[in-house]
Each structure stands twice: as structure tokens, then as C-alpha cells.
Image 1 (spheres, rainbow, N blue to C red):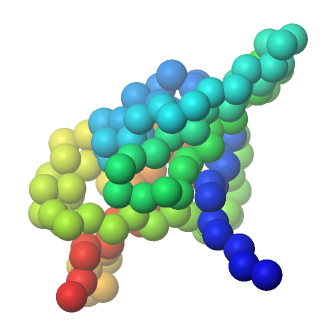
Image 2 (cartoon, one colour):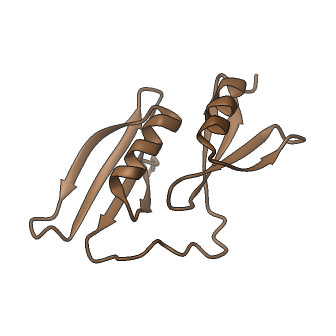
Length: 123
């Protein structure tokens, strides 16, 4: 029996704002969308040509306030082939929330407060 990771889900408060963030910050585009017939939820999958793994953004119509992530330290990690350019972009966007220069990594925070670790491609 084999398993393959296919997506991670994040519940989001403002779907369009989140889609725009992932597109600007990581070049991800919507690959598919599922909308409930009653309008109670929208699920959007985002991805890019570099990976089969998708981000699933779930918007719930009846959720009326930002998510409280508490002490949640779960995060997604993305590897980049141009660490300096990625850092410059994220610095310009104002979304860097933590840096660890000694480890050569940093984290960005998406509009809902989810952290994404950015790591350089290492040979």
C-alpha cells in the first residue's frame, strides 16, 4: 500500500484575498473549484507547475470572523531556487513574520495567519 500527499487544507476568512496572496507570493494559480449548491462553502485548489501537491482553501459562508490559530505551529514549507529574490518579494509584500538566518530560512504569514516556511534549494 502506498500513499501520496495531494493537498493541504486551510480554512480562510476572505477567499479572494487569500487567492491573491498565494498567487503573488508563490505564483500559484487556481486549478479547480467546488461550490456547494446551497452556497454554504467554496473550496479552491491552488497549485503550480513545480509540484503536484495542492493548497486547498476552504471558505465557509456562515463563518463571520477571522480564524483563531492559537498556538498552532503547523506550517507548510516551500523550497525556492532563488532565495534572495523570494525574500525580497516577501519583504516588499510585508508578509515575513519570522526569520532564522542561522538556519537559512524564514516564514511568511498569509492573510489568515498561517505560516509558510521558505527554504532555499540546497545541493
